[in-house]
Image (cartoon, rainbow, N blue to C red; front, side, top):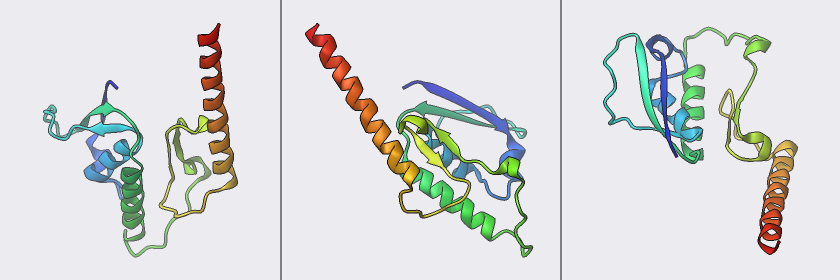
Length: 141
């Protein structure tokens, strides 16, 4: 639990070709920060405020965010898509190294589980098994 306050320049949302206020709220929900949209936030034309309650990641919200971003990117303008620099070629992965959390890809991709995802699940299962074993040994000793 706990609270998280996210503040970013309002132009990040108002001038973005891929983000809206609602899609960014879905992104926050996708990583486990549920924004309280009814909370009073300071009135500002230059800043966007989000008061979030920390909790479990919401995979459905992450998928909504990916789809909305993909639709806005593919529907933007009649120009061919620009090739992104290698510096922008990354995914958001919060807690994924141990199998906890969510991976938010750059674009919506309906993929089959990869080898890395299978290895991640196996590593998570082994990690949890070891924790359970340590807890049982601690109770006995």
